[in-house]
Amino acid sequence: SKNIVRGFEAFDLLLRRRPELRGRVRFLAFLVPSREQVPVYRRYREQVMALVQAINARHGRPGWQPITVFYENNYLQALAGMTLYDVLLVNPILDGMNLVAKEGPIVNERAGVLVLSEGAGAHQQLGGWALPVAPADVQGTADALERALFMPQPEREARAAALRLAI
Image (cartoon, rainbow, N blue to C red):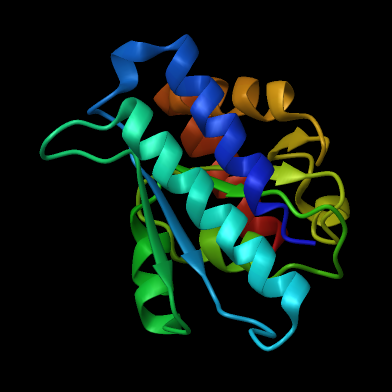
């Protein structure tokens, strides 16, 4: 439901299209272990980690890896990460409210841009100030990530302020 693989695929596509971003951007993924005893969940985690390794091998270089995964239940670490993002990707296939989409804009200190799946429950409330993406659209997600990274500062600040007011 969290659509992790497609988010990484979109980031991979972005780095392929915009090689000048290599060494300049990083994808920090804060993933919380869930249902590790269920085989389908274990296989999905293995698929996610294999994709991360492939992307890091394709685009990485000494001293820089494009993706860093934090696979642990460490809320304070994730919250600290949210204070620093330039772009927050929340791309579930379908979920209830999705608190990350709300927590991120509240604690972010950088006028970060929210890229938000239309399948997130928070989309109804926050979609007007986020960059919307269809959860299965890898190309569209890559486009939204690119747009967010290159968005002019005044627009970033206006969107961030509107998100905080909407929450």
